[in-house]
Length: 214
Image (cartoon, rainbow, N blue to C red; front, side, top):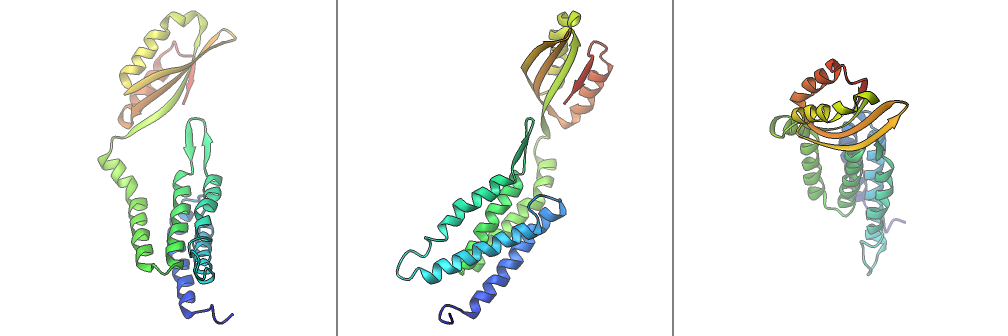
């Protein structure tokens, strides 16, 4: 047992623990499904697999065992991604799980400087993304707008869609259905944040629209 144990392994475990906690803290503060404990354990586990792979490989390929981390971590990442309507959630958490495993592997193989370089890079984008998006990128949203009109107002359908088109940046009609003398219209539209209030005002004040949701 002693021939495989080194004091350096304890340092690697501590460094992986710290790195995992740093990455997991942000997810924990946002109350995500994979938080502090999950991200930290993933980073530690990846480091351990890398250490074992390196020590037990002998003359063989030291990355053989560790390579399975890449495919195995995909199952954990897929588990936190879910779809609700037209929206997909959990992609950022899955990405953090992925990079936590990569950083843990780097630490396990002794590449501590590389690990912390990418840890800092990941933290920079995680904490600055909202600021960059808000100040330097156009604030557009994709909305799945559902309208309900009385059947007798079918002739006004084209005019209503055209008015919504003028407010939004892009619009496609993705669904049209008649149910119990009501027309159900589904629109996929892209709209700027500054125009949301105008769209809502139009929808609320238009007496021809029986109800709407998005």
